[in-house]
Length: 502
Ligand SMILES: O=P(O)(O)OC[C@H]1O[C@H](OP(=O)(O)OP(=O)(O)O)[C@H](O)[C@@H]1O
Ligand SMILES: NC(=O)CC[C@H](N)C(=O)O
Ligand SMILES: [Mg+2]
Image (cartoon, rainbow, N blue to C red):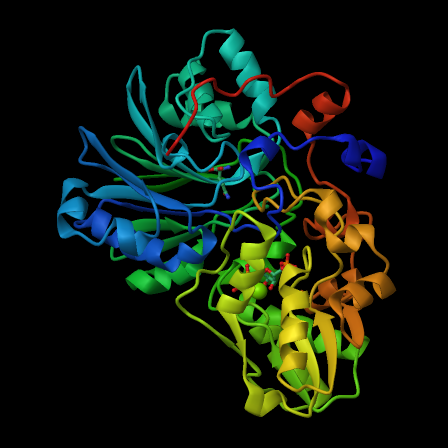
């Protein structure tokens, strides 16, 4: 679905009131994990969540089940802070557990929105962990509330629990699939009932989810790096539009949606996923290097060395250096005690934050013509600081290259990019961007070049192989909440009158 520029610009972000209006980075996503039928399920889940920390640094939680009762622990903070005490993990009893590392896309960073969420159904409980974002959640929520539903959170994910509760099907797996038929957007779900674990991926496979095995027990995780962390073997990806039921009889697969071609999110490959993960059969490290190689073909520069903007710019810079024959040097050193993305209250503090995170390696940069490689430029906060920093450290020329195309459109499937007015490329020509970023030259990987790096001959415009709306404006699903708002109706109404202080 292609919304025109004026249509999108006219739309207001329902979360705007809960966000820092200067907030600029592509925020992270969420990580989901689950293990079924094994001793120490919660301790294993903590380990798996450590490997998925890069997907969400805001809050985390675990829900476990001992076959009768459920136990949950949900807190703000990193996995290493929340789940360090053995007694906390010991409270999470049972041989099955699911976990979530969160970065909010809907409903704000409040404790009542932290996952896994839990609901008591008429035939037992269900805990749910969601990575992604629903594009019709306010529409559904408004309807559910008008029919009597009482929401405990303001998160999009809770809508799924209400839909499950209202299904008239008998079996829990059917109730689960009934709920999924109502939702739109991106989702990778891991759910836990008294006797089964369920995994599901949206019809286009926008968000990733993999199946692993640890001994005889099944594991579900957003990325394969979580399987490696716990010593599990990779079985396969959950397919797009697939629901898997895991219980004592093994794994049963369902396809509740009509058959569609998969369109995984390109941003998983560009930025989100960990370089050691394999997503939909492709090594993140390998495709990032290919993006760098393709970038060197499309935008070479007369320079002395190639320098990555750590962390996620590193593999692309290696590929660029290999292709161009220039030396790869660590001209910028990253402080490992600063998180991947930090949301700060003002632009001034954020500017300092970039300095806190990156420092120039003067010995490498002095007197040199430098090609700086980053994976993406969103608002340009990182780039302008880094270009200045590299110049101040004595670089003679700075040529900035982005290993992804210009980001022109917001995301509604779990990435939570800033509004269109704040996206650098959406509002400036290439030359204007070069001037703003104070670099000697600027180049972006082309959309076709990105598809080449992904192993295709180019973008198939009739049936694009990936979800790429942030570059093209072509959204692969309906954006019901946006459409309703564009028509002048208030789909969001009032999410909650309860003020949150925590
Ligand atoms: O143009 P901007 O608005 O500054 O956003 C783009 C930057 O943000 C991301 O890095 P981030 O620090 O989030 O993560 P990383 O450490 O994995 O690179 C991305 O890799 C770019 O460096
Ligand atoms: N980034 C995500 O995947 C977030 C999941 C969910 N929409 C939430 O806000 O909690
Ligand atoms: Mg970065």
